[in-house]
Length: 219
Image 1 (cartoon, rainbow, N blue to C red):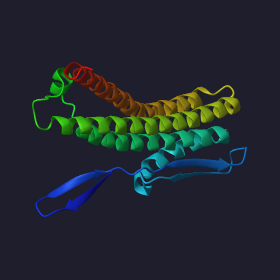
Image 2 (image 1 turned 60 degrees about the horizontal axis):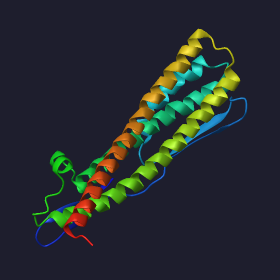
Image 3 (image 1 turned 180 degrees about the vertical axis):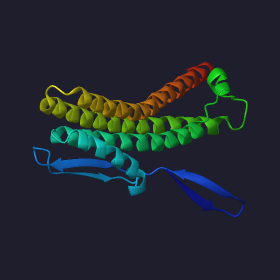
């Protein structure tokens, strides 16, 4: 989400510009897990922001020194969790901006649009545009969640195949990584829940407007 300044003769307005971008997290290496590389391509993070996550990877690599495949998978999940948190922040910013455009305050949700005002038609146009934007936004968010979940399932499946019966200390370390990942993944899922709630609210208001038009202008 970027802010673009537009100048005119009377005033200066700030316009939100949404750009669609991609983020990738890729892990490669030999089957034994001794040699591997994990790469991130994303405009959402940088080396400084990644430093804390990278530091949290090092103890896990040490604990799973004799289970390198598991160590590699857990490192991937730690970094994927970091990306989830960054995505959640970005998506939340976009959702807040769309919410402002739609303009559904508590009064509008309870009473509907005020048709006696000169701004009613403009508000309706913004609401309908916002509804379409929310649906596109939800589609992108759903695709992101699906890909992240797919990556998680792949890593967990590999860990279960390779680990066998874990020592209690290793099991605790494994559970800690999974819990941290679920917390960050949950942040992203929460944005989707709020997005879909907003879609239902706008859809309900739109349908109510349609009923009003049928009453005011019967065939």
